[in-house]
Amino acid sequence: MADADKPVATTSENVVEKPRRRGCVGHCVRFWWVYLIVLIVLVVILVPVILLVAVPKIAQSKLDDAELILDGITVTNTESKRMTMAINSTIKSDGKVHATIEPFLGVMYLEDLEGHVPFASINFPETTSDALQTVNVTQTLDIKDEDALTTFNTWLLANETLRVTVYGETGIHVKGISRRYPVTFKKTVEMPGLQMLAGTSVNETSINLDKENNFNATAWIPNRSKVSFELGNATFHNYLDGQEIGTVFIDSLFLRAGEVNKYKMRATIEQSPVLEALGKSPACDKNKGWLDFQIRGKTVNNNGQDLPYFANALSTANQTIPIDIGGTLQRSLGITIPCGGLGGGDH
Ligand SMILES: *[C@@H]1O[C@H](CO)[C@@H](O)[C@H](O)[C@H]1NC(C)=O
Ligand SMILES: *[C@@H]1O[C@H](CO)[C@@H](O)[C@H](O)[C@H]1NC(C)=O
Ligand SMILES: *[C@@H]1O[C@H](CO)[C@@H](O)[C@H](O)[C@H]1NC(C)=O
Ligand SMILES: *[C@@H]1O[C@H](CO)[C@@H](O)[C@H](O)[C@H]1NC(C)=O
Ligand SMILES: *[C@@H]1O[C@H](CO)[C@@H](O)[C@H](O)[C@H]1NC(C)=O
Ligand SMILES: *[C@@H]1O[C@H](CO)[C@@H](O)[C@H](O)[C@H]1NC(C)=O
Ligand SMILES: *[C@@H]1O[C@H](CO)[C@@H](O)[C@H](O)[C@H]1NC(C)=O
Ligand SMILES: CC(=O)N[C@H]1CO[C@H](CO)[C@@H](O)[C@@H]1O
View 1 (cartoon, rainbow, N blue to C red):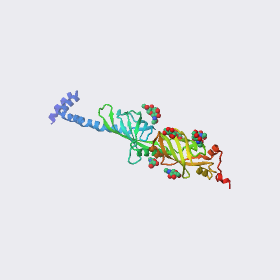
View 2: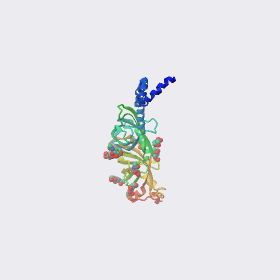
View 3: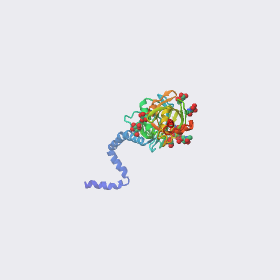
View 4: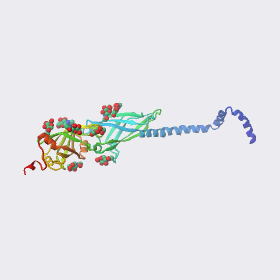
């Protein structure tokens, strides 16, 4: 063994000059099959693992990390069975993976309502993975599930906030790879609700003694949500002290996001319950002629078509509106109702 080592040690002086080549030549030639196996493993296993497992996983997780922001929704041309829905949205991502997401059909549903029944489906256009991109879509929406749409409108109308999920199956194309990868687009956005239009006020009032249309006023309706809708002609039940006393009409109502909506309104109201309430405390003394009315949605009709998905949502709750009826009577007709009522003086 020692003999065999010596010549190797001497020749090794030559080896020092080209250690790699000799190392490889001997090694590579002898173990070529190992290299072949490693190569085959790389090609046969690793590349597909990267292409089939790693890339789609990264693509999906990048898509999951991206944020969808709803900038605004506008619902117009509302009909019984269809409407036009415009959505302006922004998708935010880190922009590190260069990819294109195929157009897809996304359904929208209330995240916090069991069943996740879609109330709308939207065709999303092709998008890229740019760090910031706006996606604005306008399309006709056929109402496939009126109950689900009514429930969405009810939540939108009643809640302080609501969470809506956009869900769709689509494909992603990563730059440099010809393959298409299936991915799931699923984003939940939280949006402000209308809080039952709380804060609606009514002023610039006038009254007459006719049987119909005996009250005119201006209604100021706040809109806290990012959704604007064309309602059309809306009517409301009108209650005083728990009793229905008439109907309120607002024509061509289009609730716009981001502003206080100013509307002319008119009403047909029974006079005796109003006069009676004015002659009682607290209206006649402490409240100086102000009465609390409740209104609740009754019908919504746009260009001859009933819109139950709005009407039924508006009918789910009452909204209290204080109105200066005493002051209105004084201004319009010169009448002041004292405590005890007009009849109270003739004892
Ligand atoms: C979307 O953006 C366009 C352009 O800025 C604007 O005219 C439109 O009113 C917006 N629509 C919605 C639904 O926010
Ligand atoms: C999309 O709508 C936003 C407003 O929400 C607007 O600023 C942007 O210009 C619109 N983009 C396109 C491509 O219309
Ligand atoms: C939203 O409002 C609806 C109807 O008033 C209610 O049933 C639901 O629990 C509310 N959801 C949330 C998340 O506040
Ligand atoms: C009616 O109320 C609105 C909103 O609060 C206010 O801007 C307006 O000046 C009021 N009109 C009158 C005549 O007081
Ligand atoms: C309400 O306005 C209409 C139209 O301007 C008018 O004909 C009617 O007399 C008004 N009614 C009252 C109660 O002011
Ligand atoms: C609205 O108020 C009226 C009168 O007080 C009452 O009869 C009715 O049950 C209320 N409706 C809702 C949905 O709260
Ligand atoms: C609202 O009602 C009025 C009077 O009945 C009608 O002339 C008008 O066309 C209606 N408007 C809409 C948007 O339906
Ligand atoms: C988005 C938003 O809240 N817009 C407006 C809705 O109406 C109220 C007033 O009632 C405004 O203060 C908001 O700016």
